[in-house]
Image (cartoon, rainbow, N blue to C red; front, side, top):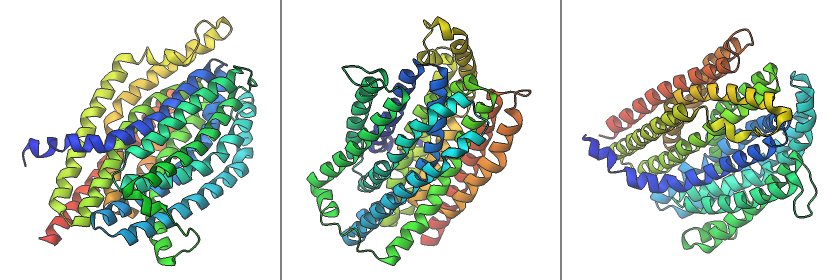
Length: 458
């Protein structure tokens, strides 16, 4: 094939992925604003939000990972014009997302005492617990929203989740400003104010996407007259069969980044705050790759429904190529701006905390060098994972993610991340090792499966 066979797909893939990217970047941008606002309160508060969110990220990874099972099923049903199967998938998926949201909320409440036994700075833990109480409750609307989002993505209607997310994010920023600092007569709640902003905006997000889907001709029949408690065992089993491994894939990856937060907490509040700064910046570029991952899931799911396997492989490789080009651009950005970007998060006019803030920026700028190096491997692994989900191949990729992050990445972080080794930078070298291993093994898996499909179909 010629290079133009791949590049001619760029425009369509970008149009499909861009709304997903905007929605995901919206979430991350609000986290970015949260961190800047909270950073003005002090490094202990910034570290507390990092610690509280580390628990949230683990729970979210399970919920969001599970919900991704919906997209390839809906995409396949849509391409095959099988409305009844698509509606049944959506209804059962929404039910399971709601149940999972409630279970994860209860699990986080039970997990709170763990903070005291993790050797984290005590002032950080005391600030993090009331923050986590509220943010944990917001998991319920968030994961229900994910059910709607993945359904909408499966129908190639990627703009609606973006619109709902943007509205929620604008509301979140306004509420954060009012409630963190006590503006316009509102109570000054500090980081708890940020949690209230998150909670309220997530309920609004669910209401808005439901309203949008009800108004659209393509989706109205899917979301109307849903008999949510009339369930079929067979469909529940299919969604659990696909959703559970997908949840574990995301869990293994998010958990190693969470472990990086905890390991940096062992080094002190400033390394932990620096880790949060670098993690927040690198997660923004990751959301672009995540958008392409969703595009890969949708397009591979469509081609699978049509049984066009040669086209499936060509389209997937086109998305991989686009992801690599964008990742290279982000890597260069981090290399050039690694000293400047962390300065956005701290207040250098605060003379009382000047030495702490300076240390945070120094550490974070080094971590961004590691982030620059793993841009390409991080992008490849998440996009290929999306393509494999489009093929509804979930078990082997789950094993690959476990091996990559926990048998290779975490031991490197643990040994090199100690104070007498490389400290924070050593922790991030472990992340680099895990992501690179995952990218290589997942690509080998996708290459093998698609060649096998083409041979068996010919």
